Amino acid sequence: MKNNNNMKGCYPPLGQAWISVSILSLTYLVSFMDRQILILLIDPIKNDLQISDTQVSLLTGLAFAIIYTTACVPMGRLSDLWVRKYVIIGGVFFWSLMTILCGFARNFSQLFMARMGVGLGEAALTPAAYAMIGDLFPPHKLARGISIFALAGLAGGGLSLVFGGMVIGFVEQIGTLYVPLIGEMRSWQVVLLAVGGLSFLMIIPLSWMPEPKRHHKKLGSLQAGTANEPQSDAMTFAEVLKYFWGYKAFYGLFILGCAINNVAGFGLATWVPNYFIRVHDWSPSTAGVTLGTLYLIPAITGGLVAGWLADFLYGKGLRSAPFTIMVGVLPPMILLVSLFIYIPDVQMKMGILGLFYLFETTYSVLFPTVILMATPSFIRAQVSALTLLLVNLVGFGFGPLIVALVTDYVFKDNMAVGSSILTVGVSAYSIGGMVLFFALKPFKARVMAITEEAPQSVAERNVSS
Image (cartoon, rainbow, N blue to C red; front, side, top):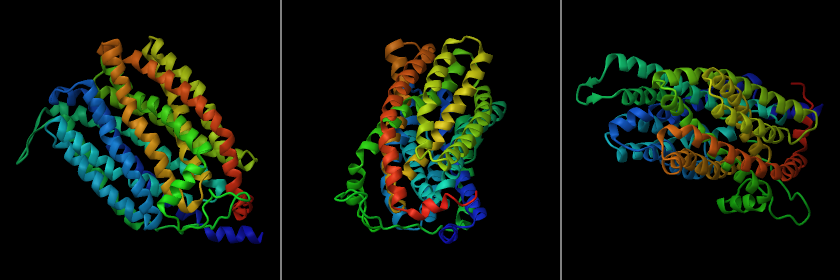
């Protein structure tokens, strides 16, 4: 009982922890709106800037990903060494400004550079937030806390479609806007200005949020003669890289599998709305509101159930619960992608897509939990950043691009975007799932090692939730 009481004092009160998670989650939601809003604006941007599908895929993917993923590493390092909420506030200010500048772009090059700026600002949020949430909750409640945060980002993707669709519908009724000193503003530009302005407001609650106490632990070797485990909480970045490489049996397979799955995930997220616009003759406004609304309920359900189930199974002794669930939902996702394209009825497509979103969200929200469970607390931001660098560089950068390349150079028909989605989705999820299956055993070893080095966390598992 004494250990339990001590551990209760190590974490902030539960109410304060959930308020902090709520603020971080809302910030993440808004960041995803800024990040994903361009997906709905593909055709208007193509028409106004006279660019190809491949160029659009660079704007939605590589322009953002190349900076976002590489900047995550120094942002993670800064987050482990400085006040994490200040890192996040600086990022929010910068990405909001750059989203607004996207709305003023007049050609492909300007929009490409502004999207890179959005990626730079958003790189500050995720590593810092992961590390903060890891210090807000004990192990037996961690999956629920982190899944709420991850779910907010996914909900932001859905809300970006709803919000963007509503604004586009409103602006299209008015026609082209003329703004003094600026000139003509197209509907897609107005949407970007509105979303960027909304992001600025998040600085207010973030400034009120307290910085949680870091749970530094000086860890010894996991086994006699093991040199890979960090020996103190004052690690240089070179030592972090050495640690990362030392456990490549887990991190390597985990990153490779998630990166391949992200090719499918980001490819589908970018091109499914456009599939309905091209193949089923939906308007951008209809596609945004319909798909965004369809996404929200399955996403929220999948995210909440995933966090609760992972914590429940962890409490029952299944230490690999989050990762096991991630691997388990991939086979039904492969089946649902195939059914979505092959079944001709639109209403049935919508039902299948809703089920796919349920499983996809279950997979996605547990990704950060797996990282945190396998990593010592005092280098979580940096390890999270390194993982995000490699996973998202492939997913963000090449997912939308590969689907576009298959459409442009394999099928050579804009109306064949559905076949491209099917080809990339089934192939990537199948390969990525097999890779992740082989990462399960080393993940179990990492979780047990971290647990053994932190006996007070074991005691905390017995505290009533």
